[in-house]
Length: 201
Ligand SMILES: N[C@@H](CCC(=O)N[C@@H](CS)C(=O)NCC(=O)O)C(=O)O
Image (cartoon, rainbow, N blue to C red; front, side, top):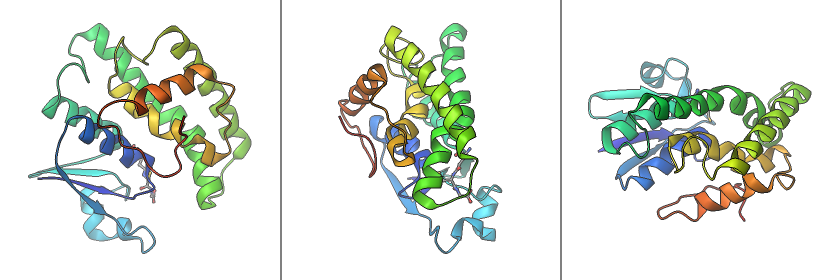
């Protein structure tokens, strides 16, 4: 059976939880003890030398990084709906995975880590990155219901959790009606799973 090493509070792990649910895949969720630094033990570092969740294990195959996990699950167990094959459809999906690893992580995700967990960050810089990202998302989602294509793909799942969790980082989403409509659209999908702290429409 698939295994997902995770923290309950991890938005990165939640990307994987969402796709596992949308694909109807059974999996064992393994709670990593973050308080006791289980993710920094030799045993965990053997799976992910960065000492971070999520990690997916599928038989003999082990994979770190939330966006890589989305790609793996979509290709291995999903269909081209989630991750297209055709280059001019695949490439826009990849742009949003890159945005997830960059602006989303340095903006709203960092602000949440600061306000929810107390980590020191450069707040002004993360607020600036977040404001720019939200403006770009609002423009995209005003023009289209979904981020990359004319239907949901893993691009939307890569971005969704840390936007839905942004209010925990003192980010006000109310000036962004197209983003809020997109959050509602995802939340209305069959087999949608949420997590504590997410914006709910
Ligand atoms: N690029 C990684 C980032 C993973 C990440 O930042 N995980 C956080 C939880 S959401 C973590 O494990 N933090 C603990 C640490 O860095 O020590 C991914 O997308 O999976």
